[in-house]
Structures are given as structure tokens and as C-alpha cells.
Image (tube, rainbow, N blue to C red; front, side):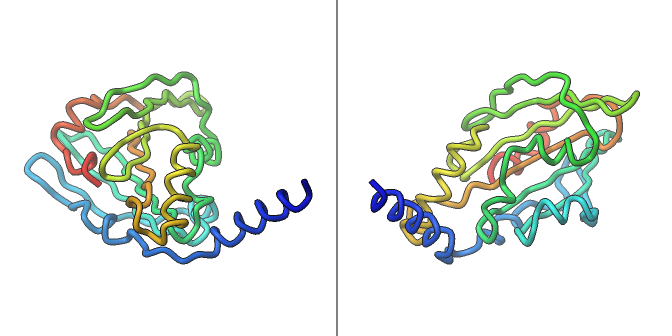
Length: 187
């Protein structure tokens, strides 16, 4: 039994060390502007950088119909731990999750969160994507990432974590936003 445990731990460590090709080019595919939206890159704050811990990521602010929203996309190729349960991003910022519901997406589903901090409330949505499917399971993301490492990058694209949140207190019309910014669903 100890041999099996040792072998499992050794395999885990080796798979974490295997270098697979970065998916940073997928991050670069997200455009800054389109017919219905405009965006610009913004810097990560120190708490976000601490959570990312070297992972490739982008943070942008976009506007559709005068409504600003933030987009985070994280590639865990260089640090799989950075692509974890998305609630940690919000909890680190002092937000509390009041409710959550699922939202059907083009190739799967996302989770809509209602967040509250002091007297402010806002919404956010997140999902993991390999380009072929969208899901909300951190366990499935982990399995997909491990399979990619085991196959040296030949099984599937690295699952990216996509988070879209209202820039200021309030809600976002998710279906309209995703319809007018379809590139969010094709990463």
C-alpha cells in the first residue's frame, strides 16, 4: 500500500513539473474592440497578482452601451493553482457571495454570482473553457489540465478561467453582453 501511495505522489509531482506549451496566444485572441464593444487593458492589483502567482492572465475593462464590465482570463499552464475556485478572487476582494445560479452558454454553462460588500452589490459570471466546451467544475478543469500534462499537450487545450463582472455596483444583462461580445465564448 505504501508503494502505491508513493507512486501516486511521485506521479503527481512529475505531472506538475512537466512543461506543456503555454496557451498565452489564446489570451491574445480576445480583441480589444468590436462592433458593439470597446476595451482596454488594466493592471492587476497586488492581491490579484498574489492569487495569480505567475500564471498568464489578462484583465480588461470593456463597455457595451455605456455599461462597463471587467474581464479576467487566466491560463493555468504555468501555475495550475491559479485557476482555482473563482470565488477566491471575490473573497480576496472583500466580496461575499449572496446567491448563484447557472446560465446556459454556447457550449456548456456558466455560473452567475450575486456579490455583496458593505452596501454595494454587483454580479459576475465565470466559466472554464477549453475552446470546445464551457463548464463550471474546478474538478473537471483539474482533470483536463492533468490530461494535457500527461499527454504533453496533445489531448486538449488548457482550460482557461473566464470571469466577467460588473465594473461598478449593479447587474449586467448577460445574454445581451455575451451576444454582442461572442469572442468571450470562443476562447
